[in-house]
Length: 71
Image 1 (tube, helix red, strand yellow):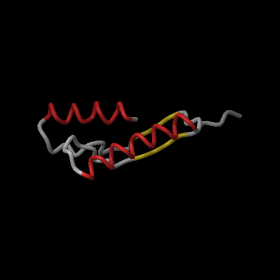
Image 2 (image 1 turned 90 degrees about the vertical axis):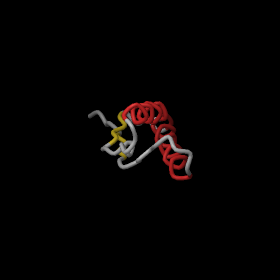
Image 3 (image 1 turned 180 degrees about the horizontal axis):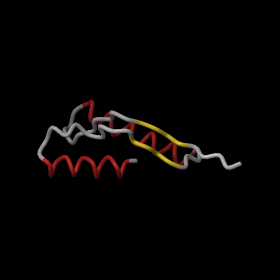
C-alpha cells in the first residue's frame, strides 16, 4: 500500500501591503513549504482565499505569484 501525505491550508489572505498580517501570512506560507520539504509531504493543497482580491488585478496577480513562490 502506498501512503500519500497531503498538507492542506486555506484562507491565508496574503497581500503585498507591508503590514504585520501580510508578513505573518508570508511566514506561514514559507513554514508550510518547510514542512512539506522536510517531512515528505507529497501534495500541498490551498483551499482558497490565497489573497484578498480587493486590489487591482495586476497587484493581485503579483501577490499570488509571490505567495506561490513561497509555497
